[in-house]
Length: 255
Image (cartoon, rainbow, N blue to C red; front, side, top):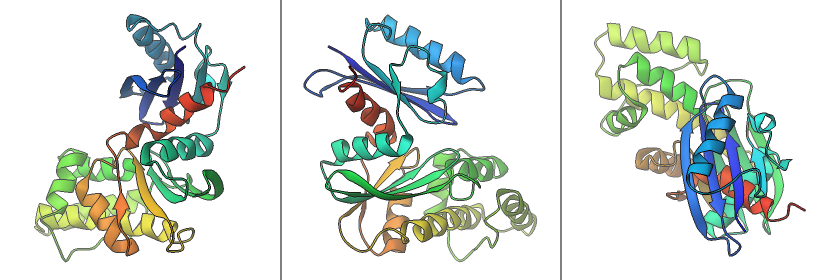
């Protein structure tokens, strides 16, 4: 039996397929685009090309676009799926999960493998992947290049957490001739401080702190978050798939 988990986020859609023994069979990511319905159909076709019929296999949907997947047997909240997926990825049942998504940031406190509490910033793009993307576009670099530049920058700050006003600050810094590395440092530091402030409301100094989401691949952000929180933040190669892995695990319980 194959179990499918699909996490359609605001910017990327992640798909994970597990077998009966929870072994990974297939995993892929693609842009969400403007239509979650079209994305869901593209995922169905891609699965079929790999010999997996989504309409004949247990499938659980999660994320921003979970209601747009007609062949899913069930829709499960992002918090539940990300928590379950993080426990599986990191092999830990007591942790604080920091998930930096495209349009929101989730902080999830997990005890004994169960969600104890969570905070979700979905009202403002500050401290999210979207904030980083907008600032990277302003500097004419990719988000990955922005993080690389930030590692070589210093001593510059952005005071506004609002994306619109922060972009104006970045443009002003460019106009003043500030080094690109220093501006990148200011951008990433503003994200890190915002996320660390949120995480600090749930993290009490016990258990692991694990980073998931699209920014979990950045060693610089992992290091900066570790410094801001005063504890080692860990990441994983499958970190961005936490939601879809959790959804696939939920699919194992579909009747």
